[in-house]
Image 1 (cartoon, one colour):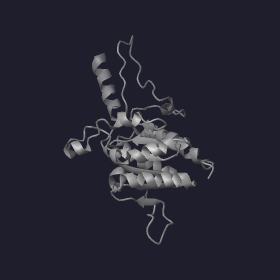
Image 2 (cartoon, helix red, strand yellow; image 1 turned 135 degrees about the horizontal axis):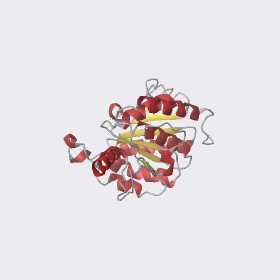
Image 3 (cartoon, one colour; image 1 turned 90 degrees about the vertical axis):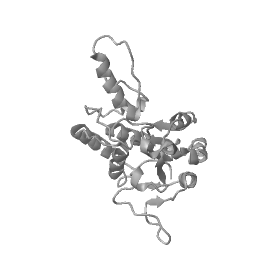
Image 4 (tube, helix red, strand yellow; image 1 turned 180 degrees about the vertical axis):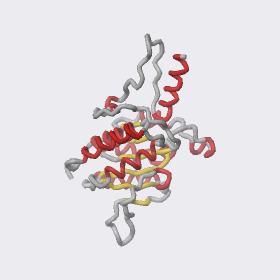
Length: 246
C-alpha cells in the first residue's frame, strides 16, 4: 500500500540478465517481456496483468497466472475484452486503490482508444504499466489500421509518461525494472512483433536504459556521423554502421 516493492525482487533481475548475455536470444521483445514476467510475477505478488483481447499477441499472461472471473477473484489476470479505454480506466482505479501494480496490453496503434486513461495515469502520478506491442510500421499485412505512425511521438509528448522502446531482450528486462521502480509515474513499453537480434553482448549490472540513451557501438577511428535509433530500428542502425564503415 506504500508503493514499496517487496524485498528481493531485484535479485531475480541480474541472474536473468546474465542468462540473456550468455544465450543471446533472437526473439521479439513481446516474447522477451513474457519471459521477464515469468521471472517477476512470482516475486512481486502485487503485479496484476491483463490485455484488451490480445493476450496471445501481447504475451502478457504467464503460465502460473489464473484469470479473474465472476465468483472467483483469486486470479491475477484480467481479460478486459475489446475495451482499451476501460482497461486503462480500470488499471487507474486499481493503482489508486493501492496494493496493486497493474499492467495491461494492446497494440501500440490502439493507444488512440485509451489515450484519455493514459493521460490520467500521468496526471494522477500512478504506477500503471502499458504493454504496447506491434510497435513498428513494418506491419504491412495488417494494413494501415494497425500501423503506428504518429503514436510514439504523441505518447512522448505526454508529461510524466515514460515511453520505453527496448531494442532487444536485455533492454526489455531493464525497461521492466525501470517501470516497476517508478512509484509515481506510468510507463509505456513499446514492444515488437518481429524477432530482433541480441545487441547487448556483454553482461553488466548497470541499467543502461536508465540513462535514456547510451552508446551501443563506438566508431572505429574518428566519428563523422552519429546514428540514433530506438527499439526495432536499432539493429538496422547497427547494420548501417557496418555499411558506412565499409
